[in-house]
Image 1 (spheres, rainbow, N blue to C red):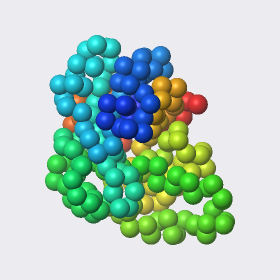
Image 2 (cartoon, rainbow, N blue to C red):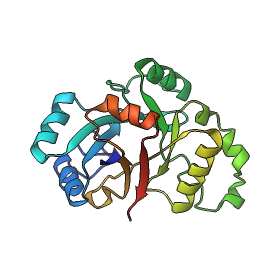
Image 3 (cartoon, one colour):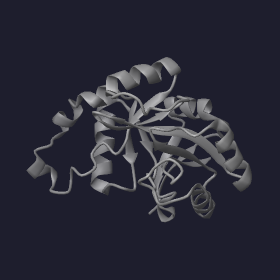
Image 4 (cartoon, rainbow, N blue to C red):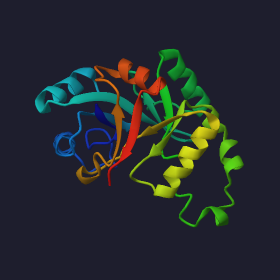
Length: 209
């Protein structure tokens, strides 16, 4: 089952230029079996996701990208919004753990290679020591909005820390949908099964463009 696990639409993410209908049409064109919509700090209602799924014949799962003081963190398996309060990675992880969900640091090194690692004085040990990475279950290592080098560095850090490696396009426009996809070993019916499959690493990542 091919899913794109990181997507934004104009419904609840002001930074996106892609409507839900455009997302679904792009997902079908990309040959996906479904999508996981991860709006900023807002999770879609189950009934709305189900209606979109029925209309287009693709699975529509729900996640959320939470703004924290340590950067953006993708959350799967928690059914509520995150607008109120200032979220720290530790506070968020405690909430996610209590709900049985998973927290993934989104695009953890975005922008770090604009001037090169050398000039930024970023090395592997400093990355590993980042306290944020000890308050998540995994790192996003395939994201079409960052460079291949940044994705690769995220993968190396995740492996050093024994964290999950997760991928999603981070699409804000139709042409980016499906550029980073996750191929699951089985068909997933809901967010609970998504979390279980991620937790047990029953998937592989693919960079398509």
